[in-house]
Length: 408
Image (cartoon, rainbow, N blue to C red):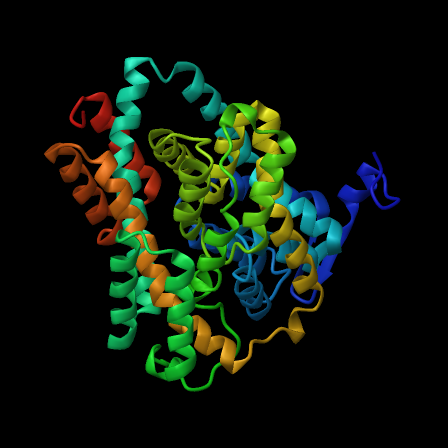
């Protein structure tokens, strides 16, 4: 079907010509499809593949322009998808942005739907249950490793370390995360970013926001959005499902791991749409895909309403960030943040790291029931954090340990 007045054949012949090179529309789509299919290893690994393809190989976007796109992509939603949209917009406008984001996510969504069907259909098979048992410690390690990675950026002075420790303690005491983060933000406003975050370079061109700080921007608001009257999974409607994920998507700042404690409260604690074990298994399945961990929404949607529910939940979660990315891509040169905003983010950044770490601790209490499970989680954390092993490799190790009955 023609789009914007162009036939499909003509669209494939449309070529983006930039100072350094050119690329056809279909070639761009195939490149993003390929990256979406092989981009295991997390957001930054995926962004590195995009940079190699469009900056160095095709030379259709400058390194500085691409860097701006990565930075803007961390404002709302998963930045790997946003970076794909930014690149597509710079090459082919709104159609390029939507097309790039769609084909990039397609492999992960299809894979999650297939794995979700296998899980909910055959999860009583001993081999599959054993494999999922082996994945549980790896998922805990992935969460803790993400907290460590964000902490390396957001916690660089002793006041920030105190804020992080206080947020861990508060979360374990079941203090509402909204109060934790608003309090940390107020502290940031009072003492300023310069006393919380170390400045490595005095003056430098715009760069991607610190992952920990951007992730912190709305962690508390995310928790607030997850609230609402409890509802039984059997009675949920497509509209209620979409509304729930849309509310989360409207204020989903930062990386995918920030979404884990929010969705746990939303899906398990508030609405009981998933059991704790299903949630943990959904995280494992999400990590088996090359896309962002936010495809956990696809798993949850499938659990409630099948394929239609999986697609609806995914679209609802991503819609706000996609619309915002279109706006930011259109006028990204005018984007900048105020100093007061940076002070606030510097305050709640360390608190967010603590909340993510506490999510790993809380989930670990329920999932790690033996010394072997603790040993598997420790080894996984060592592989992920110290040796920088690809998550797919560590997940495969977890599956092997489960199948060998090392982890009960």
